[in-house]
Length: 232
Image (cartoon, rainbow, N blue to C red; front, side, top):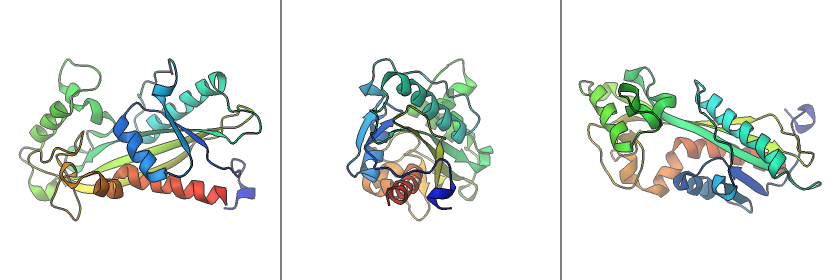
């Protein structure tokens, strides 16, 4: 569908993208893939940004909620200058989906270990990995299929401080869950996740390879294509 046929379609030159995170690993991956002349800001660049409760039941729901709530706050506190390019807000939600666990941990990936304890909030990578391995203890290799899934929500704030409808971009990386953690270069479930076509875990493959395969990388490539198309 062409630009003239959609109400939210407009030409722009990407200048500033606010990433709704404080996670340095995530920011580095986004910057490496999108690159270009864009300026990237994070929550660390703003005083007292809103704390968004990620209580949606899907990755898309959480990503959209984070992007929209931050955009509304920025439209009041840091609106783009009139006649300037839109200010973009990017938020994502992602996690691990394991077929043998009916898609768990899913949206609970960062707090998976807390689900069977009195803990609240995010739990450590080690605790999350330990719980995952315990639940898969008797599951054979051929039934340990899993994927990392990511959804990115992009919201634009135009020079009139109008917030455009969010655009969604998704990506997935298929693989399997290993029987023990391997490698020291990753975070989260990386030491357990072995992508299709490889024998090494994400934590063994290194950032360059991971950035080509990862769920977030695939979603970001779709976002990059979107920016390129709209800038034409």
